[in-house]
Image: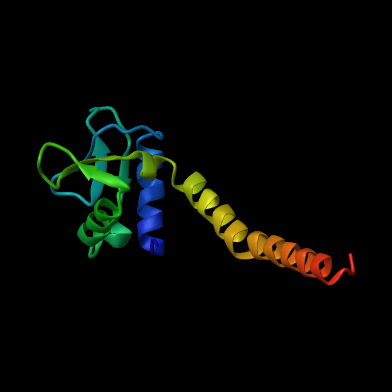
Length: 121
């Protein structure tokens, strides 16, 4: 489960990378992330500057990001990070099926079998 700051940073990193898995880096001496391109846009994380390291660490630990080059300054989005919304939707559908639809089907089937055995069907 992602907190609001984690979701917000992930959303902005996806926007910065244009939904690709390109390398994203901290810009030295600023509160911004940038792509390796010199002409690229930047994402200013000043709003979360006191907790950005823990947010990035949590996104890495949760599988949304991976570090590049053996350091924690460069990273890229994983498939889980790129497709967070669709994975969340799939999880919600699976939850609804397992917790609502399946029990209804089981209770109807059980009722029909019971009625058949009693001879009332």
